[in-house]
Image (tube, rainbow, N blue to C red; front, side, top):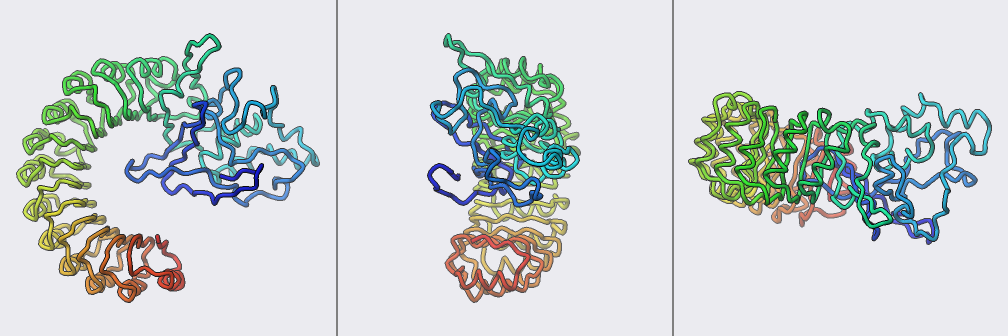
Length: 503
């Protein structure tokens, strides 16, 4: 992040998945973030980018105008649109440097001609201009003046973003040492319908429900991470927040399966449970019995067995289209049999880290789940080329295939995949037996838009250079690939100009 006082500059980190993280400071403020709804495993912490060069001459930065830097970090109070508590300073600004009562000048009071000042607050122009800024930059711009805030606080600028609030950010410390829950009115004005709360307790959740104006009906998605919520807290939250249809519980070890039985509501259509030590087969029984409208289930549970996959009801067989079983180590081919018979309409399936699943299990998937569009078999060490033959023969609608760390996949397996005309994304990260000859099979796959070969040690510069034949390729990942040389990247920039090559 740039620091204008010492001239030290650092290249901006451009958000690629929607995550914006405001740096933490010693005073505990400013660690709130706003994140797009993307898979958590792909999130990266990013700092705000610099201002894009889109300003008209009348709005261009001038040395005589004290416009705030968009690289300046914010307090949670600024993010929420409320005043900071007395004595608190903006993050990144020492209290000795803050001028009491100082505020950013509004465009109406800035030097310049009347036409320039009018242009700076023209809502029609601002409504188009602000689309070019990241979420973090919008938070800063909203502090410039009331006119800008009024435009920026329209819900349309915050669609798809989820505020991330840590427990320490939910309270202000009063002069007497007492704690006061922060105002969340600024979030309500912007119409946020989803929140991620980190490290909260039952009491914190009750305070959130009481203080967020939209909590009862307007919140559709709730995510609790590394929190001490108990069965009672979970029950109160889902009883009070009647609008919640998407629920995520990650690293919450204080609720039990009994809590799921007492709290889950039929309105929930998407559920994610990961790293919760008390989740086993009985939790799946609760999910299957209490959530008839379940469309998406993401589960990471080390103690779930094959038996649990037979609990799904006939109605869920029609409604459930996404099932991700990540690192369910006890699941075997017998569990796959139960799954394909219980959930025949799946379009997205992940068996990532289900290390006991073999080629026979993949054959069951291919024969019975013909509607699959995405299949993840990463970290399944028993998968061989035979499994890829089953996939190529039966899954004609498959668009995405993930084979990361499938160490038994060879060039023969890639020859089977080359016949799949619908495949758009293929991940082969750290497939250590894939060689140049295997890549030749992929050169005729005109449907491919994304190809990942990161960490494949046997691929040479010569073999990789042939990928220029994939002219429709949009993204190519070659991280930790020994054959990916600077000369090769230059070659790709010339012959694959529309493809983003990740070094």
